[in-house]
Image 1 (cartoon, rainbow over the protein chains, first blue to last red):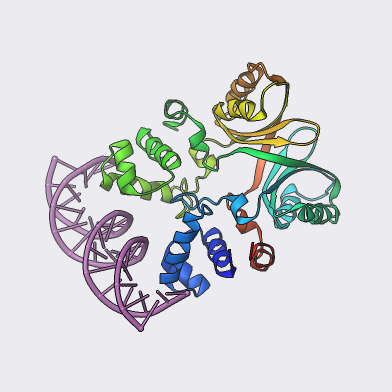
Image 2 (image 1 turned 90 degrees about the vertical axis):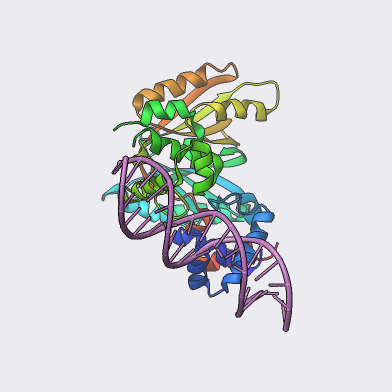
Length: 161
Length: 161
DNA sequence: TGTGAAACTGACAGCGG
DNA sequence: CCGCTGTCAGTTTCACA
């Protein structure tokens, strides 16, 4: 994982495409080299499939933290949520009913970064209290929700709307 | 969203590819039609980008539930986690430190399915107690963690390992 | 709307420097 | 690492069911 690998992976995430041509435009790395790099990344297991799912452990973002946030705000919750989403490493922001107001999930490099994350939250005026839960082990992480269903269930539930 | 659309989307999720040829093998739908359907699904916003990210609201899986599970088990936690992962709709299973033992995220069609989900959990002998949190609104859900970072941060954190 | 055939375009493998 | 070239798969178009 050198700078070029990171640039390519970042470009894929940002552009939402793996077209060598588009990646070339974004990164200025020669198309031929894009191929070369992508092959290596696939062999190393960093990129897992044709859909370019990333192995977070392999890229070095193996630390997952779930943060419950209790917030106090006058405006709309969108604005608050947007601030949460802007904090580096935050991938998911949920507005919830129940004990806490928001549940946030972040993917980080190491424990040091957890501290940084928590400070980022506490620095926001709207944040009253946070409760961070450290993930010891990610036992399942299917980005593709349909994978979590039997075909027949999907046919029953989703067909015709 | 008719049966064919669902079959195609399910095949993409299972196979981890969007190769029309492979999808044809899996679904027996003519390649030409695969194209035709995929185009429509993209136009309708069900498929969001070249990486085939799915709009969960658009497919009808817009209900998200976060379940804290307190479990009592003699064997290894893998076995328990596997049972959780096998429950329909469950996309993420985390083993955590802290108040609860597991945190699980599921994507469902409607409130009725939430009941089903909770019963599925409670039916497991290892499960002692569950606490479900209903997600009112998903304010951010980036499957691609790298998107949640500035390029410079990634370069600092990830280059050379 | 769905599907087959024909024409086009981009992706990917291999070699060579 | 990267340009070049041939091949092949993916894509678009269109005509017809």
